[in-house]
Image (cartoon, rainbow, N blue to C red; front, side):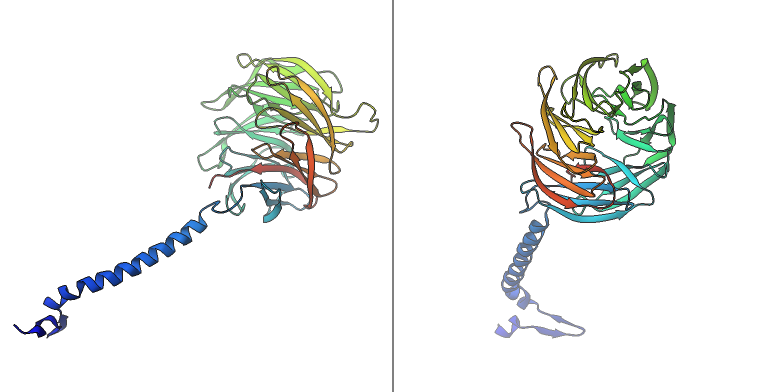
Length: 394
C-alpha cells in the first residue's frame, strides 16, 4: 500500500480526502474547539458585564414632573452614596402633576392638571426613559391618581370637577377610556387611595372638610357610596392626602388648612373611621401662613412625614408599632414650597421638590430615629410638581 493514499485525491468537480479526512480530523477538532472555547469565554465576559447590576451599587430611579417645563425628568439615585445623576427627559403635551407607579416599577401613571388628562408610560429599567402607552381624557384638574391593590384599576380624584373616576388597566399598563366610571363628590377632591383589603376607597376633600368613602368591587371595579358616604372633620381642617399603615388598621391624613396630621382607626369590614389623634406639623410659635401638602409613610410603617408650605419644612412623626399612635420628631428645613416628596422603597432616602425654588433636596433617613439628615441639593426645573422614587424590575 502506498502512503500517498493519505493525501488528497483529485476527483472531477470536488476535492475528496478519502482516508486523508480521518487522518486530519484530530488536528481539525483540536484547533476548532480551541477557537470555539475562546469565543465562548469572550462572550461570557461580555454578557456578564452587561447583566443588570453586575458590579454596580444598588440604585433607584427618581421621576420629577415639571409643570413649568412640561416635562418629566428622570434621575438615578445611588442608594449607597446618595449620588443623584440625570438620565432622561420626557417632554409632555400638558403640565404633568401627580405621579403613581405599579409594584413592579415598570409602569408610570401621570395626571395632567392643565389639560384634564391621564396617561401611562412604560419605564426602561436601565435608562429611565419613558415610552407613552396611553393618554385619555378625564376631567377638570385631576389632582391625584392611584392603582388599586390588584393593579387592574386606576382611580383618580378631581379638584375642580369635584368627582372621582376609575379606569380599567390592561396587562400592558394601557388605560381603557371606555371603562371609565364617574362619581360626583364635592369641591376640592384631592386624593384617593384603597385600603389593604382592596375593599374601600377613601377620598379626602380640602373644600367641605370631609373624607368620602366608597366600596370597591375588585372583580369589576365598580364603586358605590359607603355607609355612611362621608366622614366630616372640624371646619378649617382640610384633609388633603392620606396613607394607610402597611400592617395596622390605621390611616393617616395631613390637613391642608389645619397644618396638622390626623390618625384614624380604620375598620376593614365596614370602612368606618374613628378619630384617634391630631398633631401639629409646625412649631406652636410659628404665626405665618402655612398649608400642608404631601404625606408619606415609610415602607416598614415606622415613620410618617408631611410637608409644610410656608414653614418650608418636612414634619416627621414616629409611629408606635402596636397602637399606631404618633409622636412628633419635629421639623426639618427644606426647599421653598415643598409640594411633593417621596421615599425610596428601602426607606433610607427622602427627596423633596421645591415648587418655588426649582430644586430637589435629598435627605438620608436615620433608620434608628427617623430624623432627616440633609445630603445634597440639585437643580431641577420650573415648578417641580411631584416626585416618585422607583426600584424597577429589569
